[in-house]
Image (cartoon, rainbow, N blue to C red; front, side, top):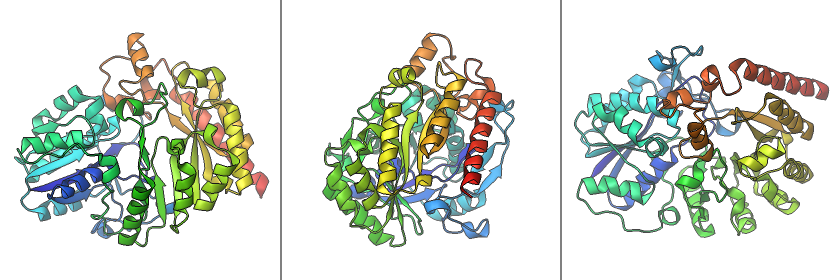
Length: 448
């Protein structure tokens, strides 16, 4: 059978290719091929896709990251009150149409949506697909479909879309069952399947996973609800990296998108192994600071790791305990001390701070910023998003702090400060961001 897999556009007020690759769809592609099916792949977020030069010359920036092609579009009515431009990020519509025209006959279409508030981009993508394939079975999965099954069915009902729940083999078997074709045996897909980047003709980085899931149960995070923590064997990681770099020898940046990269028991062996590949490695997902010691820090440096983000979230000790007890201020201090001793470029070391956590006070943000800057690392402010199924979300609903049926678009972390009266206001957050900008500029001026 012949399948078309499509990674949808992003519709938002802000988006950047900070190593974004549709890992779930790439795994689905590889599993379908393993079953003997044909797959064609269109990634609307591929900045180097064939034909893009007619619209914008692709340009890589920091370690392969870069800006998407964008177009300002009309806002959905529900966010008309938001004083921000609304844009479509990704492949120009005309180019997407050209690619759809070239596909020919197919038996099924698969797409997926990750961030829940990006569903609007998924809908617009499916609408465009339906102009060319009005009757072909179309399946939608991903984090959005899992966390918002009812909303998904309602939103995509008029587009004759099958909503797929679950992940890995479980989700794909729902597609195969529809066709009464051979289903996948219950093998360990994460261990056996190697990420399939064969559809990318030019690529400046690759994203991989050495593990999935996380044993911690942070109150704001949905990962433990979706995945059981497990890690890929070293042999398979070596095989996967070798295959990717053989097929794409120009790749110089490998990005690990693990949620718990440091928690595997054979971590030191893996870091020794990674030294065999002459590439830069990056950890953008917020590693666990309490796991860092001098030996691990040295091994990370020797292996070639460059950008490392630490999961800090808040400087308030009570809030640290309440949200999951995964980090303390002392943990962050010790980790940074180790990185400095190892000789890391400290401009590449950052710590995530979550703004608008339930119950958070505005002064906590200023304290967290000062703490990070005093340590010599970059604070990265991430606005909080309530995610269905998490402890925080359930408490917000139970206490009537958040309306139960709030549209996911309104829960976009950029938009929440515009309307959520129980949180930190847009004006207060703008002051925090200005404070951070001015402090960083003052530090840079001192270095001159």
